[in-house]
Length: 68
Image (tube, rainbow, N blue to C red):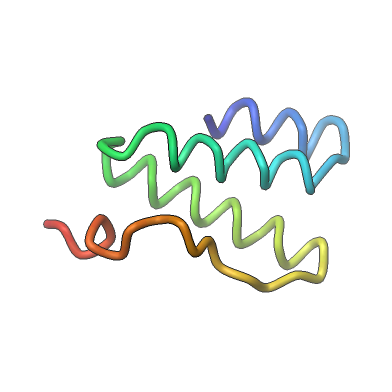
């Protein structure tokens, strides 16, 4: 997920598409390892700053973030 998003955002300069890839990946894999979710959300935040947008994904269940 991050590799594809990075290819879109960094190599091709398409930050909006990279955000879409991350959003789709986060929704598609609700049981992804926490470190992968963290890295995806961190990169998503970086992309949002680059594009001047600062929204957070609203479709991701909050309970997933609290799980230990």
